[in-house]
Amino acid sequence: MKVAILGAAHPHVDYALEEVAHRDELELIAAAEPDPTMRGQFLGPLTGVPVYADFAELLAAHDVDVALVAGIYARRAEATLLALDAGAHVVADKPLCTSTAELEAISAAAQRAGRHVSIVFEKRFYPATIALRRLLADGVLGDLALVASTGPHKLRQAQRPGWFLDPVRYGGIAADLPIHDIDLVLALTGATSGVVAALTGNARPADHPGFDDHVALLMRAGDVAATIEASWLGPEAADVHGHYRMRVTGSEGTAELDWAYHRLRVTTHDRPAWDEPLGEPVRPAAYFFDAVLRGEEPVISTAAGLLATRVALTAQRSAERGGELLTW
Image (cartoon, rainbow, N blue to C red; front, side, top):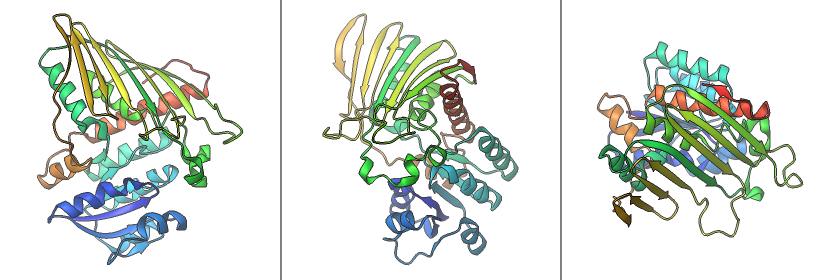
């Protein structure tokens, strides 16, 4: 199976590189990134692989089975659409795109091509998340009622490229950082419609004028209410890039996931608090290649990725309208 990288503006290009390194069935045949700085930073170390400055040029020169899309956010839709039109499956870093129009075009192209578009929502596969889903399936927490998550990230602004702080090329914080937890809420509830509202702000305007650095989101999915806050205000001196946490409240108990420190703390009405045993970590994109190599649909399906993206883009639109409650 021939793999190509279409866009490399983030270390998550490793999603593809790790799988190629671990699987004899995969071959990295080419890579492309239009931005010369990003191209040098993330693709420069590749040896024996042609590197292009243009997505279309790569796809015209090579038959590609799977394209990893991890470029500048505002160019990810372009890369995805070109890959689908060339007959390739797409495995993408989040966010997949920065507008609803792009999302609709990707949906149509995926259906037309009969190919998968899967976003690597790696929080699904963290050991604490897998253990939580097992508890929910076993009824330990009862009926799910509330989800509350927090996601502070270090900005490390001096190391960020200029495009990242440009709202047009970045696309907005509500469309970016909360999407992992949006996907988890959708996966846990099975909801396909609901409402969402978001508020954003900039706590450090002198450092990055025009760039919102925090978001608070309220979401209803089925009968479950979720609050998701995320920011680029994570303390720079912290020992982790982001202290990502989620509290899940059910009718029979509560579970608190601490992804940064690999812990799942559980308490129920009839059992005092305990730390649930966790399994071993897995590679973030392993699920995708496991599925496509078997000719199956990835567990993070096209429909799942598009829905999470739609909710995130709707949240961004809500923020631009001052927190208006919108349906999805």
